[in-house]
Image 1 (cartoon, rainbow, N blue to C red):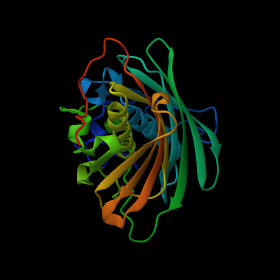
Image 2: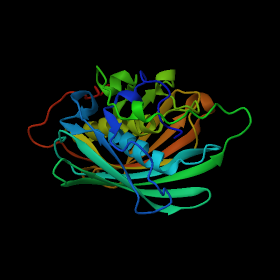
Image 3: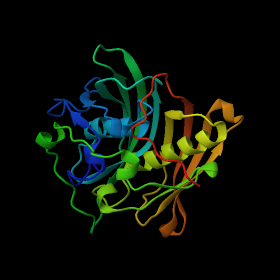
Image 4: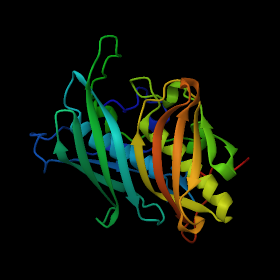
Length: 286
């Protein structure tokens, strides 16, 4: 899969996600055939005790992406992702089961069910993927190594800090992220979950400043419009309707790439659950 981290020391590779399936389905074209993965939330990948949706997006991207990436001569890029999560404290383990809803020549759609150890539903995600033939001069497509994918690895500091994200102006939801090697996918662009993280943090700081509360982002709708390759990537967030509704629109720009619009995101921020933990927060400056 294109967005699998190229290095085990990269930030996305240490989000606590792992495959529990150890092989592709016997018939990957069977819509009922699925793959399974898990996420072990840690304080570094949570905020106010709630697992970051961008981290869950990485789990979905990994499981669903492996399921649909069956052509060795084509890249499979995530084109869009719609995630809904329950605003509750993070479970000990989050389980993901992905299946294919539609498989076209150039586009695919997957559904991912998210649940805890007891099978209680915690979220749902729809993801779209675009398949593009590899061009001459493209990087080599890395082989799928199940032995690596089935082992969870973890960050040793909060995710926002590990990704080097800086708050420039909290009131306008402006945060920036340099595109360094530890944040890239094998195609050389900013990894999809990190794109989602920048948007998530933009909403987090903007909603916090607007309401004076400690919000968590639970819903993300990400449209990946172009690959961010130069950086820094900068966000701008705008409230949709009354700020108390918690709905926001975020645009992400590749400033070094002539200000190109690389992602458009809709998100919802809600109040953190009672008894929250505070590890993994991003300090809102600006």
